[in-house]
Image 1: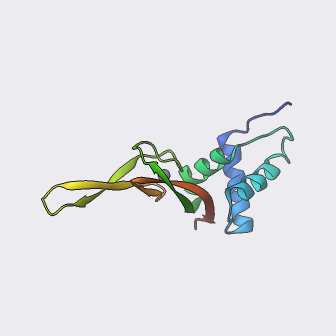
Image 2: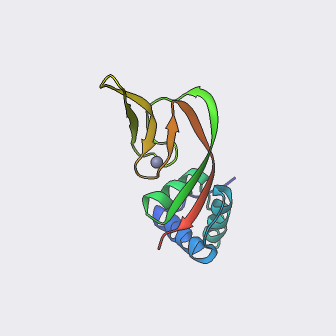
Length: 130
Ligand SMILES: [Zn+2]
């Protein structure tokens, strides 16, 4: 199947239009479907992934995002933010002995956080930024 990749500029413009028209969009799949429909008016072979739409919306300051997560039993490992790809920082707690322990990790750009048991994002709610 033929497909083409739209430029960042085109995707960003489509996301902005959709958020303007629809306001809060309560799932990433829905946002991506609407963005794709808008893009395909220009080129019916365009395709875009949910992850790309989410990351472009965040990196271009188009939306604030509310993240619903599922708790898992897996240990969290330090690394890039699974939501926006940004850097995560340790959440530390001081101990009575004067040291500190890591309680989890938090992303400064999008607000995602996890404890020592990994929290996996399952739902994203996008609200347009003023
Ligand atoms: Zn993030």
